[in-house]
Length: 212
Length: 178
Image (cartoon, rainbow over all chains, first blue to last red):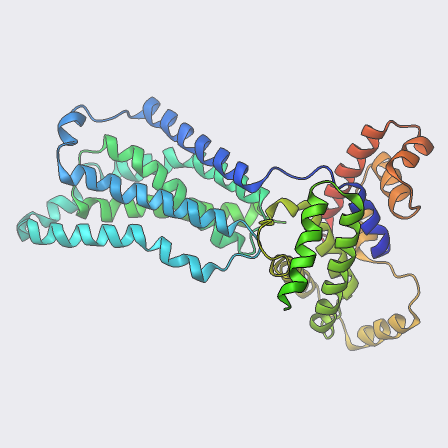
C-alpha cells in the first residue's frame, strides 16, 4: 500500500477518535481511589483510635507525605502519557514528597532521644505495611497502566514506574489510616520499601503492556 | 522549526479532529512530507526504508491523535511519535541478525529501480479479517468513499466505518511486529 493510499483510509476514519486523555485520566484516578478504598475497608479499616490520632501531628504528617506523593505522581504521569513530554522538566515534582518526608525525619531525629530511634524505625507493623500497601495499590496500578496504554508515552517504562509511585501514594494514604506507627522514621523505612514494590511492578507492567 | 508554520498545521489538525475528512487528509499529507524528510536523514545508513517509518508514524498519529494537546504546537508532537517509531524500528532491526553488506547493496540497487516495493504495511494487512481487508482496500487502494465502498461491498455505511476503524487499529498494532 502506498502512503497516499494509506492517507485516504485514515482520513475516512476521522470521526472515531479515542477517548480524550483528560477524561481517561480523571476516570482512572477516581476509579483508582475507589478501588483502593474498597480493598482497604474490606481488608483493614481505620485504626480504632483514629479520632485521637487525628489530634497528633505525626499522624497527620503521614497524610501530608502520601497525598503529596499521590498528587505529584499523578500529575507527572498525566504529562508522561503524551509522546512529546520532557521527563527532565517533570522530575522536580517527584522530589516534593521525598523532601517532605526527609524534613519529617530530620524533625523527628531532633525531637526524640537517640535511644528511641531504633524502636521507632522498626515499629510493630513493618510486615503489615509491606504486605498491604502493595495489595491496596495493585488495583489502582492496573487502572493507571490502562490509562497509560490509552496514551502514547515516549518513555513507557519510566511512566510505568511513575504509575507505581502514584498507586503507592494512593495505597499508602489509605494504609496510613490503619497503621499505628506514626514516626517519620517508620514511614521513611517501610512505606518507602512498600511503594518501591509497586514502582517495580509498574515498571515491569509497562514494559509488557504499554506498547504502541 | 517555524512557529507560524506550526500554527497553520495545528489549525488544520484542529479542524480535522472536528471530523473534517478533507482537512484531515491535507494534514496527514503535510505530516507525511515532514516525517519523510526527517526519516530520510535518520534512516539513511540503517538499512531501513524511510517510507516504512512514514507509514508507521501516520498510523500512530491516527490511533493516538487524542494524545495531542489541541492548544499546543503540533510538530513536536509529530516528531516525538516519529522518533518513537524510528527507535522501535531500529531496535527490531538490531534484534534480527545484521544484514550483510551484499544485502545492503542489493537493497540500494532495488531502491534505485523504484518499483512497487513491499513495505511493512503489506505484512500488517495480512492480520485483517477478509471483511476488514476488503473495506480498507476499497477505500485506500481503490480510492472509494465510505458510501461507494458500502454499495460495492453490499454493507451498510456504519458497518463499513466500523470495519475500517477496527482494521486500521489492527494494522497499527501489528505494524512491524514479527
